[in-house]
Image 1 (cartoon, helix red, strand yellow):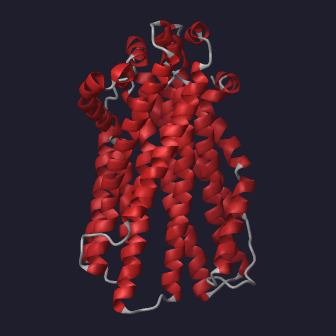
Image 2 (cartoon, rainbow, N blue to C red; image 1 turned 90 degrees about the horizontal axis):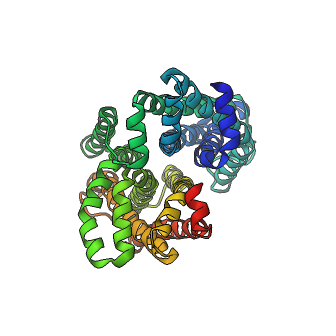
Image 3 (tube, rainbow, N blue to C red; image 1 turned 90 degrees about the vertical axis):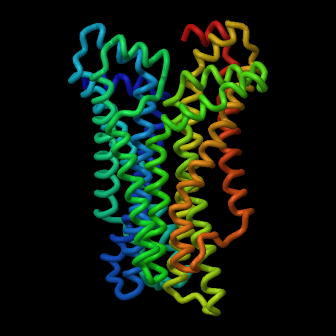
Length: 451
């Protein structure tokens, strides 16, 4: 089965691109931040400089780790779900659940090792850039040189491989326990049912988010500590809500299907029909939108509230507060880049997999323009849903921190900041879906339907 896994990786490269990129980018991010620990040890940095390096590695790296593990799990699940018919065929010819499980885990392990090794050089560049930023802002002395050592390498490779194998085991367990007839049914109609474990994990993440919010309001008096606890809340909430995304998309589809068929013309009716059959795929696509909006909005408005609190008190920013502000903007930059790439990557993978569906739809009478219109409607629904859910998740950060620092649940900051985040999410989602669909419909309908 391991040989089959390696053969599958070679022959179905396109199907594994999303997972590979998640692991590659994730390993680079983890190594880049973990190298701050190598730098602190090798340079012998002490005092505020050492504290800054360790904080950068632990706080920001920890948030990044959480997002990376979740992204790897999400993309691996999407990859295996797209192969439901293939798994059913292997079962029908005698493959046992254990063999299929080893194949899925073998594929994930092979991808993880390759991605982590290729991520070493980008990880070094990320780490060097982080240290350069700390030099420029005066938070770390210029004589502290950069070191990329065993801590960064071991954490990057180890975490990437462990998270990939763990995600594969979870995915494989569900896939291999399903009967052949059920696998074929799942391949034909994707209902997006939630497993009990998924619900349990969603509830856990949401409860942790609530806990962080309550601690921020009731316990944290120091502004830096309040930012630390509230800053994590939106990430936990976003992950918890993303785990519930299949159920959310199922409800959204049921809500908008009627109006789309009534008012959306041929494109709206086509979108309503396909959305009802692709709930889990839609959930995978909306997840990076939720993460992007929640973390970007939460962190930007958190910093705006902190700046407003300092201005109201007539205080200038201390070096520690500048350090925290830098960390916040690093988080924003990292999250924007990572989730934007994952959003584009996931949509491309999901749309490319639909080439046969598009061909069959065209053979049934739909024009390429109607197919593009249907996908545009789907993208609009995804964007609106992701923005609304992500905004709800950001509230877990914005409101508690506002109460702690300003005694007000109303966030400080410009509405244009929020609109800019929404606009970027809409552009990324719409442009990617349109470009990928346009490429898919260029293939002759008969050829696409037979492949």
